[in-house]
Length: 320
Image (cartoon, rainbow, N blue to C red; front, side):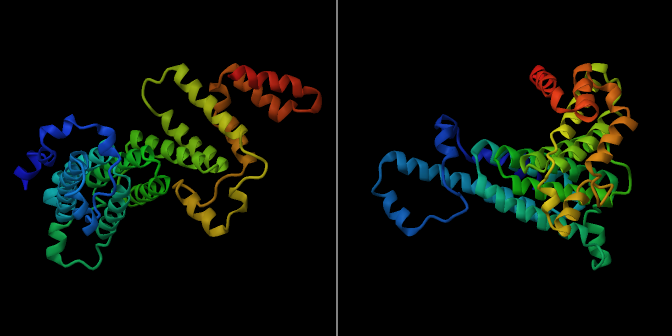
């Protein structure tokens, strides 16, 4: 297993693969699908270009199936955890480099099933417990969160926002069951990713609160400059200013609201806009913001009126 991993499966794709047009490789259909009999027949009739594409596809499939076999074999074995993490990193690199969208979607489902089995410790025998990873153990838990941050990056890069949300759900579960505080850098990453996901769905209320949690974690970083604090404070205040009067969130069912709110870890209910405005004052966010954004904030919440509309528009245009 160690030799198999260290030789790197990509070596099966000989040197001539690198000479091919990467765009042609990235455009190849799902490599998990077996070639229909019609394709096999056509292969003998088609040009050398088509034959070459089929050869490349077959080689890609060999590598892909090899990776999946390794992950499936070692995914819950604590002694092979390093092999598991290394292979996942290479899987994500493979998917990104060769644009394997459909394959990545099916792999994410398989990966989540494996994680669920790691959560289910109750029915294991004593012997199984000596082999299986302990997902609640701090170092194991941290590595599983870190690798899923990589998974999230690939999902968003491929435009797979549904998969990205599922990954964050898994990370959220991992964060809740761990026995020690999470590293601040990972906490920042989580809330920043969550805010991004909410913005892509136009959930501006959830987005603002997720970014508020990111901001609180961000401020605990050592040696922050005043400029860094100001940039993040400005973004947070603006994220609240853009919350519309009628939000998508307010029209969701209670079950969906509770599910999405639970992603924010600390609460099953997101503070309303008025509460968020109060938090900006009580947590000193306004003090860290730039003069221009503070002026816009005060105008919107303290001075807004029909006669001041021109002034407000001038402030907004000035932020650009």
